[in-house]
Amino acid sequence: MHDDAIAAILEIVQSSAAAHHAPSVAWGVVRDGALWATGAVGELDDGTTPSPRTVYRIASMTKSFTAAAVLALRDDGVLRLDDPITAHAPELAAVIGPTLDAATITLGDLLSMSSGLATDDVWADRHLDITDDELDALMATGAHFAVDTGTAFEYSNLGFALIGRVVLRTTGTPVQQHVSQRFIGPLGLRRTTWTQPDHDDWARPYRWDAADDAAGGAHAPESLVGDGALAPMGGIWSCIEDLAVWTDWLDHAFPARDEPDDGPLRRASRREMQQIHRYAGTRELAGRSAPQGYGYGVLLRDDPVLGPLAGHSGGLPGYGSNMRWAPGRRLGVIALANVTYAPMAELTLRIFDALHAAGEVPESSVQVSATIERLATELVALLNDWDDARADALFTDNVALDESYTRRRSAATAVAADNGRFTISSITALSGAGADVMLTNGAGSYKLEVELAPLVPARIESFSLARIEAN
Image 1 (cartoon, one colour):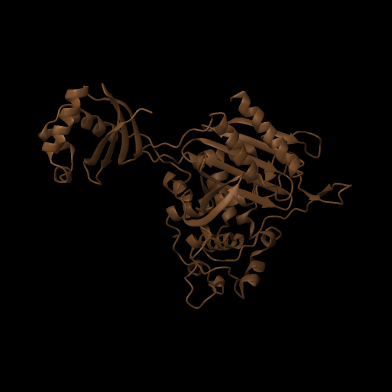
Image 2 (cartoon, rainbow, N blue to C red):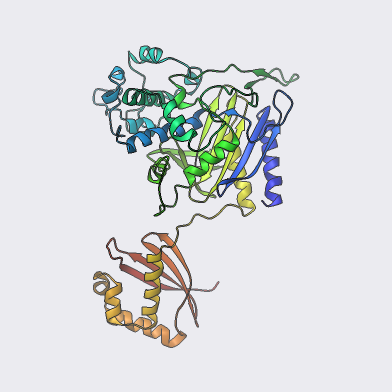
């Protein structure tokens, strides 16, 4: 990695740790499936500096694991995302929307934060370990809603507890077991657990107790909450090393491709997790605003500088965390801290900014398919030497109707006669059905815009050619 980027990241991490009174912050940059750079500031209780294997509680980052387990069960045919929660857990019958005409709450609503259940961070954070019976008692009289079901984003931890109940009733086993068996084990996440680590290499939780200005404040130990019925929303313990594997595995679902797809969750389902299923408004972070939305256990941000980003934050008494990656670009950042609600989302975005400033963030791009390349090449050959029969084989029938071959041939011939034949300098795919083709000839540079029709075999439905004027 560029030395300037490393220096900038270290300064950013140190500044964040100091500003938010974190006893320690561990961080990592993931690139092309490996930890590209990692480090830590501060120290653990034994005086050592955290390593990439030091375990922290990752809180709501857990939701991505829970969502993946639900989609795996969906793929197995065990349940459907449009199933009402009561279809599988009738004991939740009292959990209905706030009005008589409210929409039925489905698993998809819960996964995408669309149920309308009131936001409950500070309450839920203290109740991860409630039992199934205690959850039943709480839900027996219903739940309080902030908005109507299916109409707006409203972040709900309780919703993920209800997901856990549906999975339990559907399969006979809790979400925790599905996550451990289907993902944690097969992906080799050796230090990722649902319970407090059984080794000593973990960051103890603290809160910052502010005192008067003269004293400044001090750290105080924070209590731990165990595993339980609310844990599917935020109970996992993990480390930089394991989360590097997890984030890259989610990221590597892009682009869609014909390679073998052998799990532990289909690439299509992982991509489904990383699509906006509920718009969540705009949020200012690291000095700029961006629209964001919620997928399934994943938050999406359309950043004006960095482009599309995916990830999730975590916060519990004693911990703050964030993982963030650029889908399809094989680059991600993770930050873990052991002080209450440390704002690691801001830290990871600032690290991304430092990487961007150093030229280390790949541009968003669509791969040029063999079909796009072939048709673009044939089109340029046609423009250089027009032939109606070849045009018929290349175009859909609307092309000649939109503008006659006679006029198209005349325009192409005039350009070639005056300035020579076109040569392709680059092809940039805009999608699987569109591309910008940069051309040159004796007169300078041109942009050829190409669009394909939704037919097989693929044909061009429209094209336009424009000269690029020199500045």
